Image 1 (cartoon, rainbow, N blue to C red):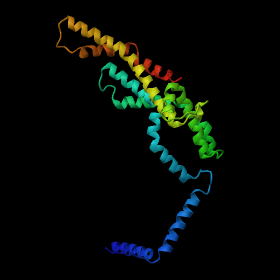
Image 2 (image 1 turned 90 degrees about the vertical axis):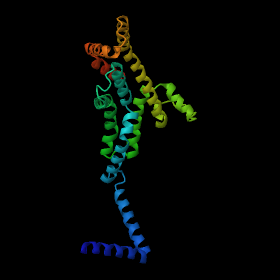
Image 3 (image 1 turned 45 degrees about the vertical axis):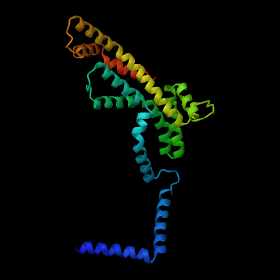
Length: 254
């Protein structure tokens, strides 16, 4: 009870001081804020630990979006989902397994890009040889190089026309990220759907053969999907399907 009374008294005193002497209180508050900001920016090159921590937390908040939209993750996860649908195994492999495999394949395929960013941007920045702006510019250029290689010119031109940008860019380095990123995404969707179509063909043939055999035998009440599933799994295992699928995905980015 005494502690509560003391806290209330202190709070009342502080409020009273602010009411009676608002100018002084505001001056103290402004001076404290100004000194704090000056201390944070005193290094001038952005290498202060607190600022770096703030930027890191900001980057982590948008990292999932960047991972999905500017890397190979979109194509990989969609192809893996198509493979599961073509097999007809419903929830096998589970979503957690597919997402985990897609993430590790994404890290593998993006390793050259991230290595170049680390060498050309992060290392010089840690040595205080370049500024934060140069770090972002170098990282952006390397990401553009990867996305431009996987993007059709037709898709890029679509967003340039939609944004009424009549400028003729001679290099991918000058193309805005707001243009190349959505163009990259729809190009990845097109590629993933093309691979998915090829994945469905052999399993569709098995479904048709099994369905025709059951119809000719008069087993109309027997589900063709249930009978065809073991044969599709057997075919996928015999041809080492996961190896071929992952190999094709990796090679499609090089």
